[in-house]
Amino acid sequence: MRPDFQTIDEITRRLAESVPGELKTARAEVERQFKTVLENAFSRLDLVTREEFEIQKKVLLRTREKLERLEALLAEKDKPAAS
Image 1: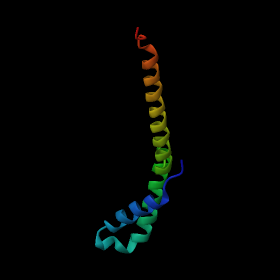
Image 2: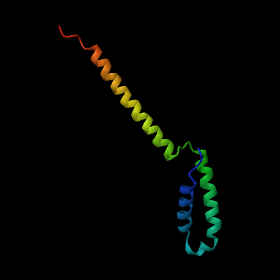
Image 3: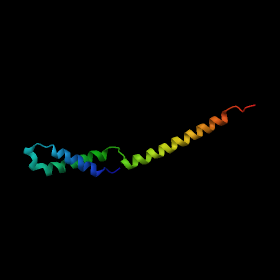
Image 4: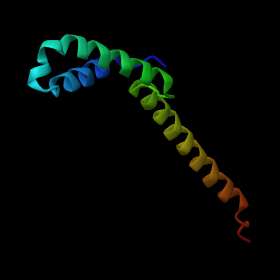
């Protein structure tokens, strides 16, 4: 999975803004270093994108609905026949 660079950029910006005022002159370099560290860390994690997560969530919901229908159908077939 490729990291979400928009999120990395946002985190990087927030981290750079938290640098004390006396270090602000080095802000661009600090921001670049933060971004590099974050990209490397995120690339080693086993993450999925929000889009991939939402797709799998929908697949799971459809599978659960199908399973519930099959369970109900099986329960109907297992009922003893009325005499």
